[in-house]
Amino acid sequence: MKSIIKLTLSTVFIFSASIAIAQKTTGSKVPEVSPMPMKPEMTEIWNPEVKVITPGKKEGEAPSDAIILFDGKNLDQWVSQRDKTKAPAWKIINNDYFEVVPGKGGIETKLAFGDCQLHIEWSAPDSVVNDGQNRGNSGIFFQNRYELQVLDSYKNRTYRNGQAASIYKDHAPLVNAMRSPDEWNTYDIIYTAPRFKPNGELDAPARITVLHNGVLVQNNVTINGLTNYIGLHTYTTAHGEDVISLQDHGCKTQFRNIWIRRL
Ligand code: MG
Image (cartoon, rainbow, N blue to C red; front, side, top):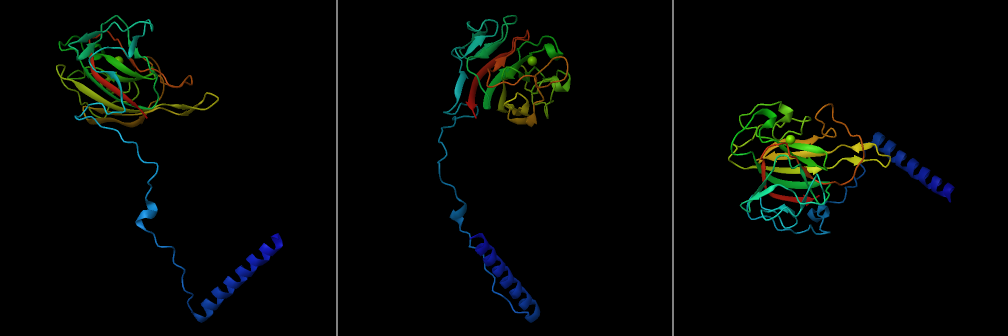
């Protein structure tokens, strides 16, 4: 059978070559075989239908597929980092926002997350105390490891990769879009978790995009590893989904309207 195929192929080749030579010598034209004409529907994909959700009515409102992490009522989605069996000791105020109680330790979500879209609103304490890293400092730690800085960076210089909207000691924000301490700030974040190989080595680092008050400040940047206060950031241990935590840095930073979507 193989030899028949070979024979047929060589016959076709010889035949084609003869035509080509004939064309060259006589200048005659062989009619071109035109490709099948494309139609609009040939590049349309219909199934499966894209999932329908209901977006928030106003800017910053949670869409229907979000998990509400805080809506002013309670901190039921959170636990104290000091004792994970206990509710956070932070203060809810006016059924609207909660405030860090300095010295009580950070808080973390009960649920673990990987890739996600997070909306969170925050404000530095109204009365300005201290400066640099001690003014309204807190932080949002993705997978309990990688910090998006929260800091009162309104007329408050500090190192550029440690100001509000920095990936702490990793990436400075593109601009300082900070509002004054008596206003609320928003972060809208797209976070891609790091990937690890089965042997535990890093396969792909985490990535993050951040909008601060609607302004792009981190454009799909690579997170270079675990947030360290001292030393370079690296990935030391493979991990899966993990909690999101908020830092107690000794300042009365406030948070409200927190929702998340798994991606
Ligand atoms: Mg911080």
